[in-house]
Amino acid sequence: MNTLLLAADNVRHLVNLNDVINALVYTGIGVVVFGAAFLIMIMVMPFSVRKEIEEDQNTSLGIIMGSVVIGLAMIIAAAVHGG
Figure 1 (cartoon, rainbow, N blue to C red):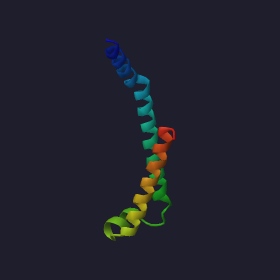
Figure 2 (cartoon, rainbow, N blue to C red):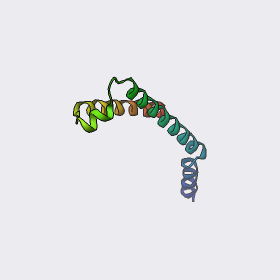
Figure 3 (spheres, rainbow, N blue to C red):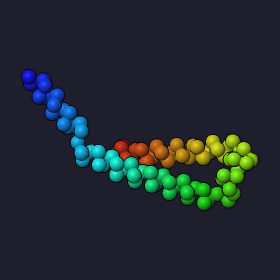
């Protein structure tokens, strides 16, 4: 009987509405920061990123842009997670 009550307490603790709201807020902030950083990165480039990757098939630029995107995502994830 005590095990069932203990399990019910754990479930209530796991589905805390405050945690869900915090996760949604931080996710929204992370997406906005990520989008802003990506737009700034594109505006700073002295050439058209779209033209270079799509038309000229510039693989190295695609790799660099992908690396920057992954780096930004890791930083934002660490900030959201609190680590």
